[in-house]
Image (cartoon, rainbow, N blue to C red; front, side, top):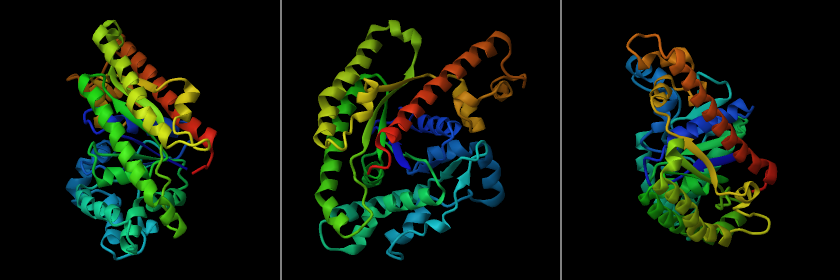
Length: 357
């Protein structure tokens, strides 16, 4: 079982829709997937449940399933030494028997203070804070084992807060979703500094926690590459777009790669997957256009949208037809190939590293 996340402190990079489509691609390749919505904004939960949400909320007054906050709260409030994963109720996808959601909760904002304090107090001999610090990772590992998950995909907020740090350090690997603009280039420099600080601090007390038998994550996730968003093939002719795309890679090599090399060893090369593929750009995701609305309405991955699904886009209630549908099918097919390739890239990490931690 591997834990993977997508992270970028800059918002608006299609992080949630990418992780959603990646999860379905993994499931179609025979993998069992657990989505974890660790973003208090709950965008992944809304996307996953949208086709069911309105009716469910208005009838029962609440969403089904256990939220991440509801599971964490007893440990954070010192009512339990660990989290009762057997009581966690997951939500099964309406489209796949192999996809589940551990839903988000706006109350996750309440976890920020406790997780921050758990981090700052982890250097002293206070077992409550030590148990809180490892609780999220321990919960995911035991929950994933319970449901026999192959992959756990965590959706993070674009913040650099304690909850995001905890989720990132609990991960085995990560992608960086990004758009080719000048602000993203600036963000990459910040990102390298953020990762350096998080990993360095975690390593300072890793051995102490490990010696105490506490379930602490390694805290050095493997980098799987960038995912460039809203890529338009027509823009290949746009020199500014091409230049920015190239600068992203140059920026990675200058800022992020040295940080990951610093924490790599012969046994754990954090750039191993990128080296295997010979690049740092894992994928170029096209602009979904009007299909994005269908995905949100039907809670389906882009590559599983059917002709009847497009009826919501037209007043005639029939949907795309003729050449419009033929062109749309071409977009759907190419998008499927992109996400299948992303899934293979993630799966290659497991083939290369097995169950190494």
